[in-house]
Amino acid sequence: MTAMLTTILGLISALVPAGTNAALIEKIIEALIAIVPVVVKEYQDLVPIVRNIIGALKADPSTTSAQLEELQQLEVQWDADFEAAAAAATAEDAGD
Image (cartoon, rainbow, N blue to C red):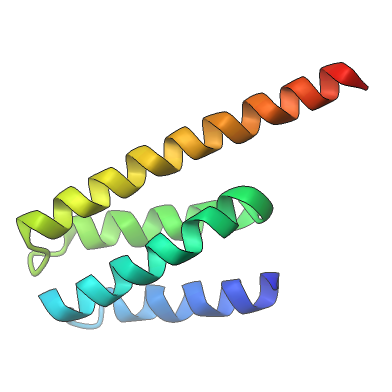
């Protein structure tokens, strides 16, 4: 699964600087929304890739204001999910 997610994120990363448009950005955001929960739960080593994709999309002049808002919401959810995962791991470690 890690190899598959890494490949998918690599393809998405390659698409971002390749002259994006609002329709492509929307598809990338949809893919990120689907992938982020899996990355948060299982594959923290992929976090930098996802963060770079989000940053590149936010910097892209083709990104609409609605898409920027969607990316910001994704980042907020992402941060909350990581905080929850960290708290759960800390509680689990304390219980051992």
